[in-house]
Image (cartoon, rainbow, N blue to C red; front, side, top):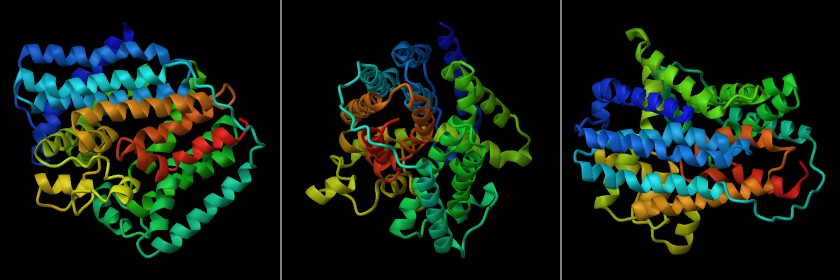
Length: 410
């Protein structure tokens, strides 16, 4: 019952932020307030609260708690609140929200099933020094490639720096993502679990290093969230309650910051909390009028089918539909692998696939590696909020984690 109280407070704060900041300040970006009835408001909050009751099946696995909490707070609730404000009639609101409720519940119901019987190879694991050397190699390669544009810019200049960082080689692109979302976070997690301050500091700095390449704000955020949740977990506190409380407070602080700190407010409220709901709405509207990709936006699928219906990547196609500027509206897995592929049916299908992936990963996790895997999956939960599942596994490096868990002892 306490979880329900926490999430109602969080959702009310989010609705307040949507009306008074996102719509009030960023209406030009697409945030709307079409109005809604009391019935739609109550129905939306019912939809928001219902998935709370699948959480009890996940409590024995830290990485599932992490994924559930971050998906719920930064994806599911924003979608529900955004759809409440963007669709004007009771029927439009409920019919567009319902697939996401069904998908979210199915996803974590599958993840909560009994472990699969997988016979791991249990080979002797490689020494961590190999990972450290490989990380240094990646940092050296990236610094050489971006040495002329490398700079730690202010938040006001992140988009110009990001434009410079986008002109990378294929190897540079993969190395940047691996360092941000996988290799760096793995080192941070190893440093915490093994109580090794040198590895912890090295891992943290390796992730922050990426900010100088593409001004990725998540690179400044991920290491410290990993550290925060490590101490929350070690003290036996509830991850869901802790993050719900912290995110609620963060939203209120960002809203009340003085005008001279507007850019910080925008980064927190619009780019962190608001964007997933907006982009999901925009993908939903775009693909009601335009052809589905039938998963051909995934490179390996398109290589086989050669059936991708557009001449640009999804993010640019959707963005150009709403705005004249040439921006990349890369979105979460529910939008890209779900709506873009098969519409609302696609949301259910990708939810099942992600649920099966979580169930498979759970089957590789044991008591010895549970904490470390949970810490590493904090960064996975953020990359999949920006790109599709299959991109997260390969470009984000998490396929390597699954291979490692299958091959080696804890």
